[in-house]
Amino acid sequence: MDNQDFSQILHRGFCIAIGAVASLVETGRHPEKRAEALSDLQLEFNLKTREWAAKGETTEQEARRAIDSFLRQQNWGGNTADSSSQNGIEKIRQNDLEQDVNVGLQELRNELAELKDELAKMRSDGEVGN
Figure 1 (cartoon, rainbow, N blue to C red):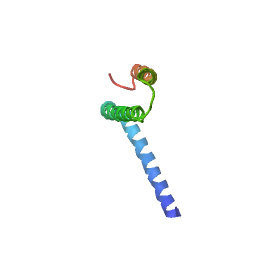
Figure 2 (figure 1 turned 120 degrees about the horizontal axis):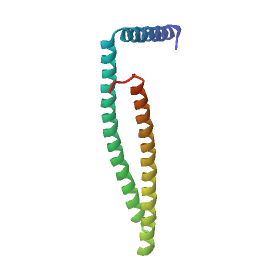
Figure 3 (figure 1 turned 180 degrees about the vertical axis):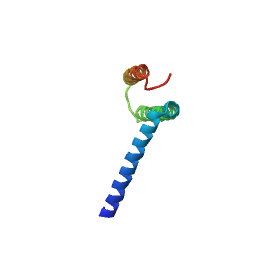
Figure 4 (figure 1 turned 90 degrees about the vertical axis):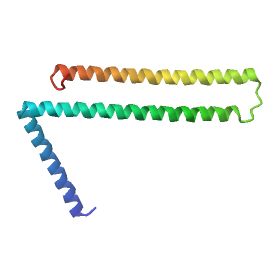
């Protein structure tokens, strides 16, 4: 990186900082602009959550297909174990998978509770509209 690139990056960062401060000051002075900015943020957040939910569903489906494929390969690998032993292995795998899913769900529930608490606090502080 030469000096000209660095000075351009530095200048751009300076302009971004000045623009952000000017926007904050302007938003703070005008209640209607503040309400509009908060509304825009809420709308953007809602759009992002929908996008993340769709991506999560897609990722979940891909993961399920990959796991199912892996388990099928393990079962069809020419294993000579008898059927009762194979059923036991499948039950263990199913239990492990269910346990992993339950742990993941609990982590997501905890994170959601934290986000709800944070949103409630922001609403009570007047930072976010209802």
